[in-house]
Amino acid sequence: MEKRESFEVEVAYAKPDVQVLMTIEAEEGMTIREVIERSGVLEQFPEIDIETSKVGIFSKLSKLDTAVRARDRIEIYRHLIADPKAVRKQRAAEGKKMSKGGGSVEEDDSGNG
Image (cartoon, one colour):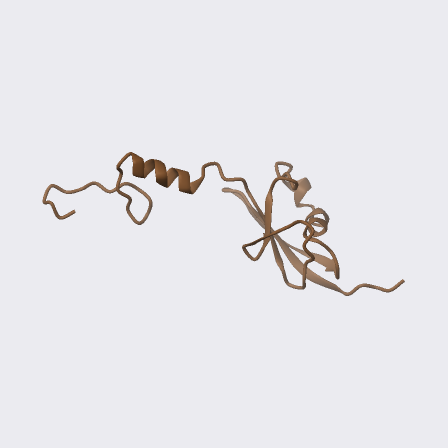
């Protein structure tokens, strides 16, 4: 039996209060799904549903059957609570001005803005 080349990859998952970044030994031909399962992150965070969660490599969305390469960072993304586009659209419909930080801006009475 021929031994496959092994290398390290990282698995990242973050919640608002906790973040994990673990280094996993992978072999040539392993998929994102196999690395995630090997990492133990699914046992550590049972709320992760691998079938419905989006995953990626270095912030680029990828499919679970994508082969991993040496030094890849596999990221598991949480489901969004609110769609950012929908929130912006709703604020615009309500006539709120937005500041750069995302909060509403109050106009001053001088007419300067």
